[in-house]
Image (cartoon, one colour):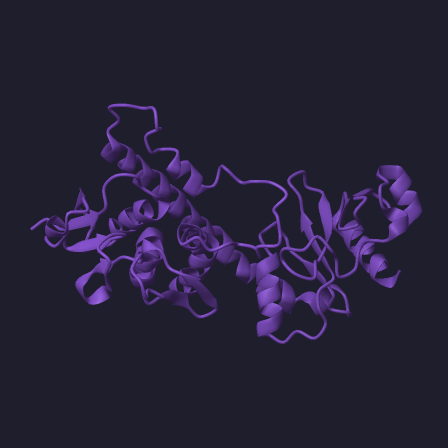
Length: 321
């Protein structure tokens, strides 16, 4: 018998659109029909209900978050109140990730990605739908973001002056849009971000072979290393923190990038020397005493050399200055 997913009709939001999409990634609700209504009698016939009904009860597959007394959060370090998207993700997320990436649900990668996908994708939807400010009230953002997923979904609702719009068809567009963004995020984290962790582990293991200080890491290919580096330094109790990271760019030249004090920061643990900044090519090579130098950014957070050896010389000399 075909399962039925229920959610409310009328104006829709990002959270229930994504919730419906995620449910259709599970074995139980893969081919489920969809009913959009606020009629409690009709909702009672649904196998699962999201974002309507005033009940949160996983045992009966009821996932609303609007009722008084609702305080459910994802758990761990996350304390943002959940929306219907967060509720569905909390209870079905591991199965969904395993399905998208063709992994066994018991695979250790799934547990890691389960938390990371929530952090990178779902939590913002929970916060926005529940009216939770991202910043303290006394901080005014310098600009407004109007192209994020919730705004794009909101734009699919009929305009105030539009007539004869099929709102259910528009909701299905929202389900597709949120779903594609979600799948893209899971695939990136599972197939690009997570494999980079192994490269960071390798670079940390080999750092003493690069320089006796252990403060220079070398990657033979560019990869998303920052977050992994900070996590691994903490997990492995690394005493000598990395200062510079070397990697090849798309043109076959080499970059020297300064490690920031945190993944989001534009500061540096130790910037490249002031006397190199803003110079290029031959003039930089003369000032640094290192042949084949290409550039050093005015901010001092990154530089380049035509060769791996030259980039390493830049990093070593910068450590000493």
